[in-house]
Length: 422
Ligand SMILES: [Zn+2]
Ligand SMILES: [Zn+2]
Image (cartoon, rainbow, N blue to C red; front, side):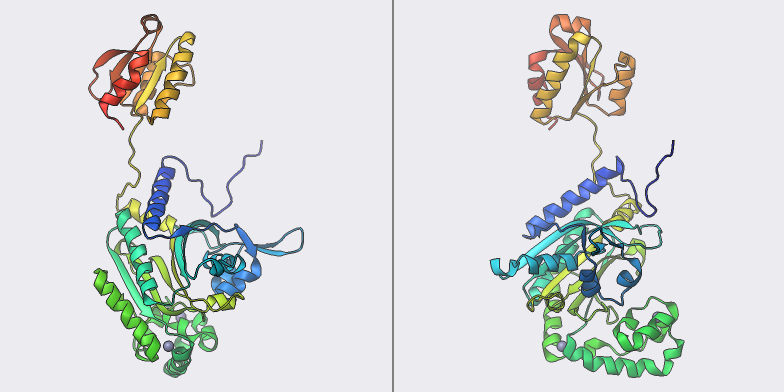
């Protein structure tokens, strides 16, 4: 028979690794709640045009990496490659602005991009992130950065570095664009092919090029932060003093850009030393012009997105175990068919009381069941054989010291309560 394989670039997340995922997700929910962010869930696919408009036709994501197809109704559909455009679409479509003037939203989502598979890069991958929609105030950016940092700190991730920059707004950017092009033009033929293409359409992105020789050529490039208009300069100043006030260390990187026109003012990136400077674990910033781009009213917004696979890889490399791997509280070993009703009722009672317990489902020998209890790292083993059935008592073995006692069937919950396992 044909055996099936998973699609290239996807992964099965199996136990015990899935415990790390669940622990990370729980942590994200917990911290987001503390900051009063609320979860939003959007469909796994959207109209292709949403992403063409919301991410930008010229980006790698839209031009090369999207999973797009025509459905049976001949509509162009795309599996979502990122969350900001869907969140903004949902915000506009559901008229969320009419409920209240500001929304603080977060998500944990599966996303899809047809990238070349490599370590930490999958075609179905996961991101968490947050968006504050409705506030232009630097306080919203400060909170966003604080939130991202708080989540990373809570995971135990070491060696965090925050880089910030301001990419201004259309006013100061138009001015800067010409200054930047004048700087690049004499050496344009030395830049990489991608940068040559960007020169007319989006010269700001040349500053972001990861190509070694382009980085060299950009060393003396003018900095947008030197050409900000008064409004943008003041916004950036307030961002920095807000971070100082919270004791959040940052590095100003004048060449940190997000290349799309609807990004404004604040941009930031968090890297972990363990991965090297090229590898951001989180990126974010302000996008005051996106709502209009997607057909909504002008609405200021700021946010971040962070990859989960990469974060879990770094945590693993730093030997951080997010999920405490403790064993079962109770494993029940039974030999007689007559014991079945007692075993089932005891399991039900203990599980309802909050204990993690299990039994053997394979009718194995006592010896094999004892091995299983050990494998499951059970703290207590309850044994019920013919003698125990007759006496109405479990033989109870404390696996931490080997001491064995007898406890009446009906007293088992009391006994466990005294042991203070939970
Ligand atoms: Zn380049
Ligand atoms: Zn400006």
